[in-house]
Amino acid sequence: MQSLSGRLLIFSAAFVAATMAATALVLWLIVGHVVREQVDQQLDVQIEALKGSLRFDAAGTPRLSASFDNPPFDRPGWFWQIDTPDGRLNAPPPTHGPGRRPGHDRPGGPPDAPPPEGPTPDLTAAERPGPALHLRQQSATIDGRVVTFTASAPEAALATPARDALFWLLPLILALGLFLLIGTLLQIRFGLRPLADLHGDLQDIERGARDRLSDMPVRELAPVTTEINRLLDQNEARLTETRLHFANLAHGLKTPLASLRLALDRETDPQGRLAELAERMEQRIRRHLSLARKTAGGALTSATPLSPVIADLLAVLRRLYEERALSVTTAGVETLSLRCDEKDAEEILGNLLDNSFKWARSQIAISARRDGRNAILLIEDDGPGILPERRAEVLRAGARLDESMPGDGFGLSIAEELVTLYGGRLELGEGALGGLCVRLTLPALEQAS
Image 1 (cartoon, one colour):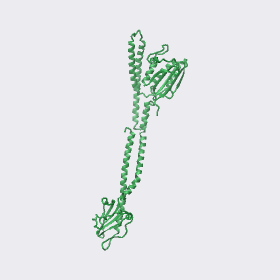
Image 2 (image 1 turned 120 degrees about the vertical axis):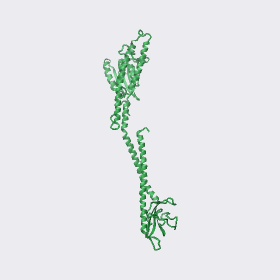
Image 3 (image 1 turned 180 degrees about the vertical axis):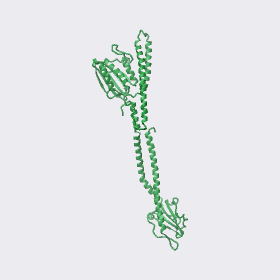
Image 4 (image 1 turned 90 degrees about the vertical axis):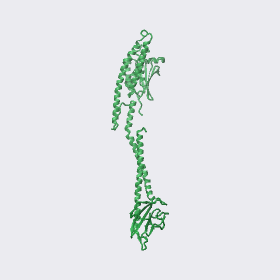
């Protein structure tokens, strides 16, 4: 079993069951011993009473000066017997049913050899016909004669009280075992709660809700959280350094290469070979930068709220395009957060919104919604739009459909590249306002369950 709580619960249940079985066995032995002692004491009292009442007449015949047929010796299995050299005295037959007496299989026969004087060990007549008996025998010398006194009780007199006592004790043992299991379950639940809290913190880090583990009040887990936070700090420092390196590399390679491609024309490259080589170089650079940046950014746990980023960008763009007096509406952006770096989110949305501000006639509409684990962002304007056959062209680096408009043609291509690096999509289409609609799909911060 892979569950730690399950292992603890199974082990505890097995331990409690074994303890309950051992407790029941020990109680059975203790109760049986106590009952046996009580029965032995009762039989010994009967034997002592017989000793005190036994007399021999002038002919040597044994006589008792009192009656000894009081309960429980008036029931089957309870008997007494006196063996003397001159005869035998037996308790009368039980009044509540047939009973077995020692020596009945030898009526009138000579008595058995007398045992040693004093109390003898318990004897059991289990091998003789009839119900099993528990015997007590003592030998004593009375009037110069060796006399054997025997008292008996049925084995049921020992087993039945012990069984009845255990009948009441077993439910208590089972109830105690149940309470122990419930206590164990609560102990496991509360004892392992810090691990559940740690797991929740790790899930929050994974989905970007937090960037560090909270301090653990449990002494055993405090070093674990400290080491994990230290590793996160080291990872963040390395990622920052890597991202800076790749940004410098991208700026150092892509910008001159893009300028080179723009400088090539039919006069400088009549056969287009240089342009083809430049295209292949740019594709290779972009592919390797993409792979490297994915590696660096794959472990990022940044959570960027969408609303503040859009609000800041709109404040800047409204000042830049103040003379155009565009109407901008937003919907659904307040409740969403993106799983990407804040600077990347600003660069993506900044390029897309700047493009809309350039081409919109009077209106821009921004809307966002959640779709599973992604955020869907729509940026629409009422500008001239882009023909379907030319939409792929504008996503190429340096492509410009209208040379009269300011810009270098890199905005949409940069936005698409960044979106792709985060596993998202950037799609161009026709919007409800009649102009261009940019559909942006990016990973969203998972909602806490």
